[in-house]
Image 1: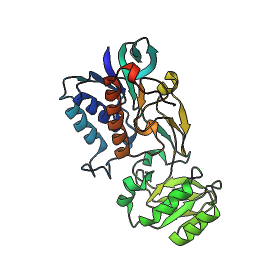
Image 2: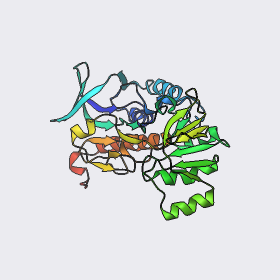
Image 3: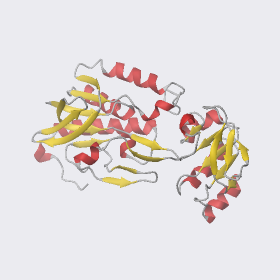
Image 4: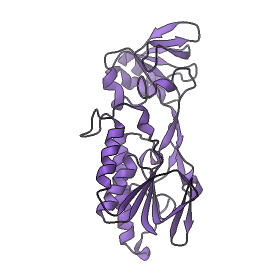
Length: 306
């Protein structure tokens, strides 16, 4: 029986495991090898790591983590998790099981892009989500925002600081009066004819084709895809969820505590704010929170509401 199983080995999971390793906890990190940021060539805005490939950052983090003798990493897919008398059982795709007193879910989310031809093969390069992560690399170029939900207009208000911006309503997400005023102030052009295809040789982008046959030249487009949990493990365990602007996420407190005793969660799976730095910080808090809970007796563990 281990002290902790961390399910998910990207920024949040490795950050949580590092804190637990330094607290000399017996930890295993189980990761399926499909981080959300695998489509991006570089990570940006991460202190000390700006411009490095996410895969290189994770490689170094794993190497550093495995210097601690109480940590193991497993490359495996977790297919089920359930409570047992003295902790939790985690079942892997090969049928084997791992056991621990506590769990940390850092399982992430998957992105559901608008169903427009050319989006998927450009994702992370010229089809982007976060301007703080990728906007600087497309600065001073013609940019677009393809609306995918009501918050897309807010995204379009931000983008002009990186380049001239066209907002595509897709015939569904018309800006509110206050947003129209902000668009006028910020110089955002509104295009109400839907985008039906992206043009150029992927992953580069030459522009977009509209439903009426017109083309508009663009160097990159931003969109906010719908997100969903990458695995149903939190649901299997009975963790409560909340609904964010782009999709559901695991409901946690400031330390990553879920509604299920003994289960913590961190990273994109447990917040509507998706960013590598925030995921890493949340993992740190969850790791510390797990250790502090373990250091107290069950009788001293404070009662709480989910």
